[in-house]
Image (cartoon, rainbow, N blue to C red; front, side, top):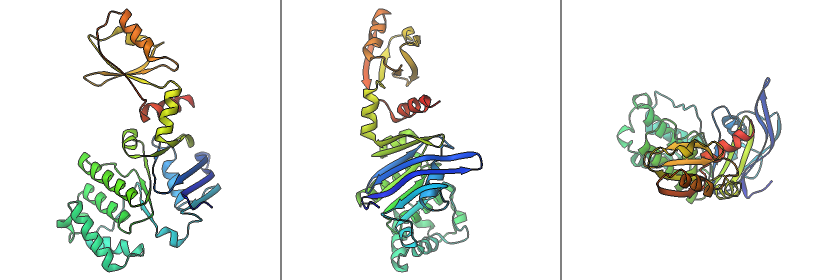
Length: 306
């Protein structure tokens, strides 16, 4: 038992029949940290979250949350946003939020006050006395997010929290997540969107095909990828740049309109690409060596396991 950790998983294994959902997963999440649980659909992220919350049990392995086994008292210190959203459709919004706050040991009056404040902040104040089924899907998602943070939990577990939201609402919820961290909460959220995770997370745990492929701080993971030669070149040239077709140098090219993002083959130094451009007589307007993106790191690690 380590009170400095919000979540501690040891050798978690879970299978459904012959389908292995999580295999040999270790995870240690320090308190007051934002961590992304990353991976493609079907990787085992939601199963991991359900094991943490004791919705399902592991076939083997141990789980500790907020310093010990999960208890009814511990549950009141957790906020959970499931991937499959669900609200009581015929209840009025403010009444529903007050009720859900009370379920998490928040006194009724305080739950109502906090609910009203959150509805105001998320532009839902005019809908407080409307039934949930009168709200749009995006509005309902914001209401469910409010219910997750209303009782000011120590640990927030968010399963694909930004799915289906427009960019403005995504930015609003990201700011709220950062606020929760600043007040001392720990945040674990699952996503298959690497760009979102890169903008928000201090730590990441990556899963592919039920097994962990990366675990650490974002800075550590990027530093290691750089040392391993995973670098990207941002390139602007005149013409198409036929030298980019050389697969001994270039793994992939992403056209970003004003420039190209070139991922190099393992072990290829950026200087070799510049030399190839010079030999071809191509005029180079931009040549910038960039640290690898989280997306590129994940793809490289995932391919290494295939």
